[in-house]
Image (tube, rainbow, N blue to C red; front, side, top):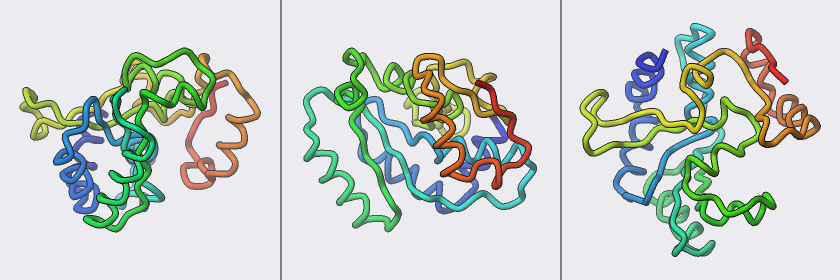
Length: 182
């Protein structure tokens, strides 16, 4: 499954351009995450020939020195270079919004996201050789993330939020084979 997802991401011209641009920024501990990868996983699980359109592009990174204003500047630069709906979030500050203890890294922050399958990203590893150096990352085992499931994260056991996201995002309509795991 991992290779199919990476191939789908890298062979899609729009997603490949987004990955290339994100890589050029060279932000610390960066990855394109959430729906950027998760939706492709579910498209592959469903055997779709065409990938789902992008709603937004979540670029996360971890830098305790960067301000919220820096996120806005990065978003503006990215939007100027490629007109997609960018969402740039420094995970070093997100614990404040979520009322958690400070996160230690991007992956630590992702381990608190509402669904296990949303906590997946793609990044570039300079030492990587497979798939041009791109790799999938998650705080959870990839065999749990790269599935046709949507699983409530036990660290964020808010059923109301989980159900609201499930319904408002139309996941079961777009991917009817998804299995829900509370």
